[in-house]
Length: 148
Image (cartoon, rainbow, N blue to C red):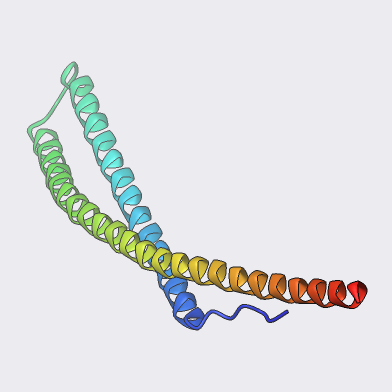
């Protein structure tokens, strides 16, 4: 029996490779988003700790220089938080773009896989039909021999 050979197999492999690359890119982008979210959580934690520490020190002696230091530190954390949120927005936008590229690559691969499946089904149907014809001819030949 003749073996099925898909003419566009190399193109299908290329589409599969492209899809895997898009998956890796999405994973990297998602990792960056998670890392940025963790950094923002750390900044928020530092802000809460600084505010708590400042509140505790207010109960005792608290100098103007300490007040300025806490103020500058909180301002620095606020700027980091704003910058971090902007960075997170950019990273999420990039992640969404990578997800869309992966979706498109998956669709392109599926198109070639469906075509392969259809061609393979047609090939095997043709092979079965040819085998059935051959079996029928053998049966007719045997019947004619035995009937004479």
